[in-house]
Image (cartoon, rainbow, N blue to C red; front, side, top):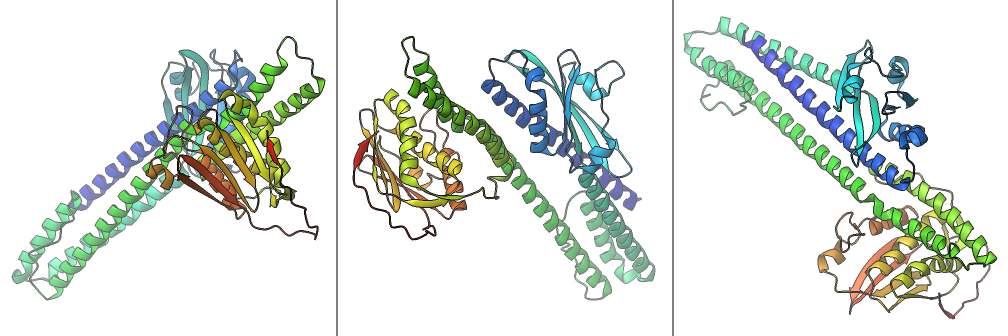
Length: 480
């Protein structure tokens, strides 16, 4: 009876833990996917029917992000699009495609259209999948329903293995106790009673050691081994709790990342907006500037799209480790071009940008370097003092210096940690962190200094292999 009770208790505990884990996981899935759709809708704010226009894109991105099948439904219940990850064979083989929602549709879909988030587990021969659907509302507007289909086979398989192991352990334990109890005499009944009490305590989750074991015979050895088992189980439980805390912390960091990622999207949008305002003026007729503006708007739009994809991937794995195509190029004219674009924003803050330096060759990806220097210069503009110049010097060490308000020492020390400082409503402390991650991929370094009301960023790169051309130095000073 005790064995059966222990097994039932263990099964109930694992069942409750599994249910709680699934609910928490689906809640986090709902939150992160809604945050993505919210950000996506802000980028495409002029689209009246977001799901009809971009349903396939949303489904594909969410499917890639969460490694699950994602289906999109319109508010009237009509099916729009479904993306299935090809690297999930169980989902590919057992996915049920449900088109327009009706009374015969699955329970989670019916409840989703009744403004409820719901999930339905399904046990298959090769594993277990879970269907999860929820309604999408933004600004009191019903956009439709998103349904996820995820493979949870590993979790249920692990639980079953854990139950089997504990059943075997319990069976062997009580068989051993039973055999020994048949062989013992009246002199060793009392130690066995202590073992029985300890076993019952363990079934209730109490793993304290046996304090009344004073024998040195076989029963005493059995009690010692039992204590050892208790300690091992208690240690494993502690380890599981620690892992749980780590998972919760990681999930919280990922949630914070999605809350703050829009900071990195503002700079290209500002550049596009600046060019659009200039070419939209009534008396504008500069064809050369128009061509340049169109080219820059197009490139910024492409970079914005790429940034969204990279940042969403970054939230899952903290920056991609695969390096992009690199090339050797001169950093001076490259930064000069960036400064010309950023001058639009600098004028808005009554600032100027002064660039000096020499030809400096690096071996890197242009898009990555553009993201780094736009982030650094953008920070200098937003946090600098009005009517002051931002001084940029390009040499073996690239420095960006600006006058600013006093900076606390804690922020200086942790300038490159994510989400550390929020000195303005439009800054969330993510830009320098991303810059550091990118530069480290190319063997570069970045440091932050503050002294005498001046903030200074210094960036270095390893020397690229060159083909023997000695570059002449230029000492001119240009005001962009």
